[in-house]
Amino acid sequence: MNAPLPANIHFDVQGLIHAVAHNQSLDAFHPALTAKQWELLATYLQPFAVRQGQVLIEQGASERTVYLVESGTLTVHYEDEKKRLRLATVESGSAVGEGAFFTRLPRNATVQAASASKLWLLSPIRFTELSNRQPQMALEISLALGSLVSRRLGNRLKRVAVT
Image (cartoon, rainbow, N blue to C red; front, top):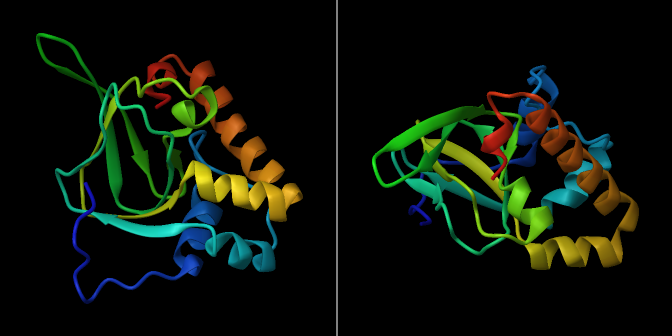
């Protein structure tokens, strides 16, 4: 699942901060964090790159990682026995994986890179560490992800795209 990173890809949490700050869509991930808190959060996140066409999340998988999108575009698909149905597009400044993160249920859709993308992943183990060491920040991340889930569920077109 993890693509080897080309030597010229540079990760800096400032790119993620910029993407989040400039995403004004209903699908934005907007935690209320200071610059210092973002820098601290970055120590709990893992930079991750995917190539165009690469699958990030597989429908039915039982893992709970949440991904914050710094750059690129992801598509969300529901797969049935006949074909794939494209449900949504997720762009920079948003997140995917929030549904299973909260519910602990298998993934309900597949997420694939529509373009090369830079992401930051937050695993359940690292979130537990964040919760133990920085409970206010963990609460803010939870509230921002919960808000994203709520907005997606309120939007008929994106409702089933909660992954």
